[in-house]
Amino acid sequence: MSLVKSELKAKDVMTADPVCVPRSARIRELARVFEEHEISGVPVTDQHGKVIGVVTKTDLIRRCAEGTEDIPPAYLFEVLSEQGVVENEASGVIPEPLVCVEDFMTENPLTVGPDLSAAAVARMMFEKRVHHVIVADDEKFPIGIITSMDLLGVLPQAQ
Image 1 (cartoon, one colour):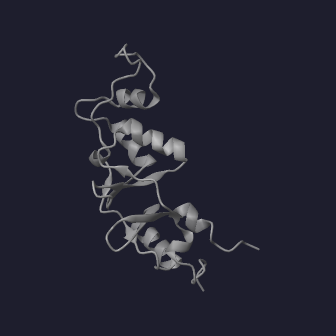
Image 2 (cartoon, helix red, strand yellow):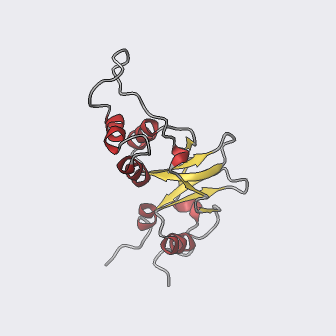
């Protein structure tokens, strides 16, 4: 017998109406979304609202740690923290480089339908080594998100 109740579906364990970001979102905006909503990953959508990727806190930290060809890592971390030497005295904020979510998101993320069993979702997450699965309708519009923690929450309590 599966540890995850076999009658549970993706729609039963997902967080409905997930916070999404556009591919053009910059790193400061992404960090703010993570902080304000206390989440660790979001679907990335195109101009029509359809899922095209997923981006996580780990992706953001990795991007900042690597920097870019023209931007050193330390600068990206300063941008996120809005600390350091003020380069634009008019606004009092460090100018943000043009590093967008689409530059480091995971394209073609794992998506599932709302009626897939929670056990099947857990198996897919394990096999693909991912911690976020997007629940989407037939047209790729995001309707929910499932994290590893969501699945752990439906495991039976140990006796």
